[in-house]
Image 1 (tube, one colour):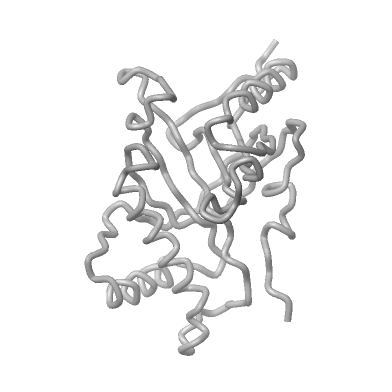
Image 2 (cartoon, rainbow, N blue to C red):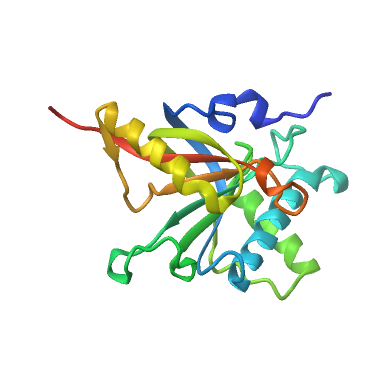
Amino acid sequence: MEKWDYKKTDKDLYLPKKTPAFLEVPEMTFIQAVGRGNPNVCQEYKDALEILYGLSYSIKMSKMDGSQPEGYYEYVVPPLEGLWWMREEDGVDFTRKDGFYWISMIRQPEFVTEAVFEEAKQKLLKKKPELNFDRTRLVRWTEGLCCQVMHTGPYDDEPATLSRLEQFIAENGCVPDYTESRKHHEIYLGDPRRTAPERLRTVLRLPVKKVCK
């Protein structure tokens, strides 16, 4: 049986074109880890990714010991995603990466409940008791109206693509709509450890709202 792959079934969410487009993002389930700091050097960020992948693969591989949850099906673990922002009172300067606040997250199948999440944490703790889950949570989240585009190339080259995205948003009667739950959103389709920087693909997504005229 072919594994369920969200990148293929939900292409509008994961494989946008290089031309910006609007979309309505539905409710999905995520395991999230919250933190602050430069992702390139911050231990907190490295720990968050270890937890996210550890929990995600613990749930996926639960079939191996017969503990798979009700409704389980074969699937591909979705890509890493991230919400990013800076506090205005700290000064918004995206070149100063130590000022980043972030929520790293991985989408989960709909059968992942709080009980499944808690069981996965206990399994992972047995293997790695040093892990701290205080900033990790399971959420069901509806992102709503957004505009997105595919960025190809190094992460540090994103500003040019973002500028095109923001121009498209303004030209089509909308403005960015940042709230407590709606932030600058990135989806990482390439692994920087295995992919040349110029070939990396990243979905850049901004929350928007229409401007009343």
